[in-house]
Length: 448
Image (cartoon, rainbow, N blue to C red):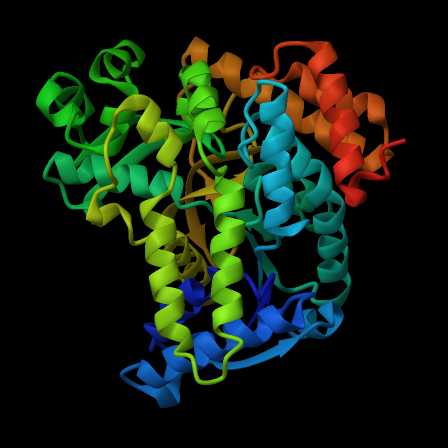
């Protein structure tokens, strides 16, 4: 089975390859094709993968790896396509943050002004990839990890239908943390989670059919023992009656987070830009141990994840169990379920199909899905509470404006996308954001 990774020079590709190395079952991925526009990054990542394969228990069973800068070549013959592109690179992310913070609003890459700017740059490229997949590999399944994941998945679904599925590790990590503090086996729990990507809530966590979430919400000590409890505070979680995805901290504590970002010596994007530049430069030396350099860089990256939010909340350092990532495990489980009909349940980004009553059928939502050889099927969910419904509908309306702007090239629709977002508090701010983003990003020159 062949897996094409679009964005194959990306820093986190070795996580995916590491998960594939642990798969020994029949029907596993036997070939990985890396695609990237940057040949030097492809070479660096290929070196890391080669060292991973040599270190594997059964190196002869490691999937073969080849790299190409030709997208069509990468896609032909693929059974699965993993999309993890970053349009504009990490410099683009840093610019998104800087422009937004200068206007006093959030510049995070998936939330608020930064997420909109990133979406406007990324959607046209993602649509082109979707069209190429439909033409060159019509039987392939596309697994999208490109941010903003829900928005990009919806853009691609207009050309690939249900054969594109978005993944994210945030719901998995949240469910794992809740199960851990409740003393439950994460593999035996049912997580009632619903919303959009980076905008969802755990409403129940069932162990053998019994909801254990009320026990957690009633115990201040338990609530204070895991990351979301420290981020949001026990009183607010009890008020919500649910556990929000960590990204909702940007909404519920927006002023504090913006101030923390403005005080930071480097924004997250600038930090990652500099950190990864050092990594890629280091592994240009053919004698440098590429895998060791990658592992050291990754450990630092994970330890500093959402550092400004934890600082604003006084939440302290991340726990060791939360530094292991997880999206690669979701990707592997998804591929196995489809390729081998190994039925499983995963929280995924898929078309709504009536799952959340407040949204239309084509809206991509993030909900538990039953996955088998025919794809991912969202599980019927209870309606979201009013406060969550309002936020989900508002953000989905923004996503639709982004899609409309990307399709039409309308600057007015782009302004509307910014102005309608709950974290942008003025139409005039929205206009200034569009003007500045078009100035700093050549990829947004299509906005007339």
